[in-house]
Image (cartoon, rainbow, N blue to C red; front, top):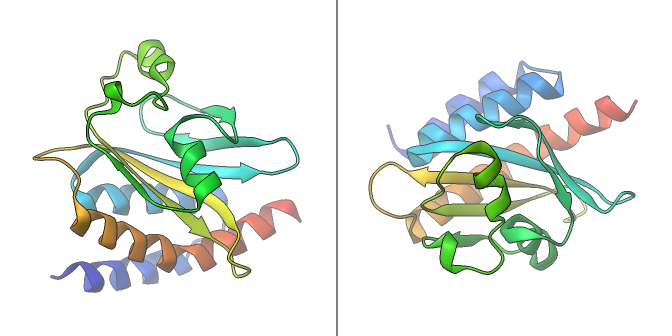
Length: 162
């Protein structure tokens, strides 16, 4: 099955969900399968508090960081996807999260998630591709995936606010 068909099948499952926790869990699980990665975090933008936070983060619980820190913060600020295959050499990398969790990040891919007004409402981050590093094909697939889930995520976030 090609990646676009895989994403379309996933879309059918996603549309059946209504709660944020369930939707984020399904998005995370499918993103990991799509790119063969170990972990996935979906950061939600809170503009009022200037924060990026996860409701779900594999293996670590909730992560809260300022809107302009780390590779995820840079993805939010620039509205551009990022591939970082040597994170410990990157000054933006938040080593404290690895230190706190005991996890060792080997490579990272992040992609912004846009709402219907083309504003960033979240950032999807995958860690540690099982074989090799993240590449341009991964970036293309995850960008397509993020665009595909953006409408559903926007609806889920709106429902949560109501």
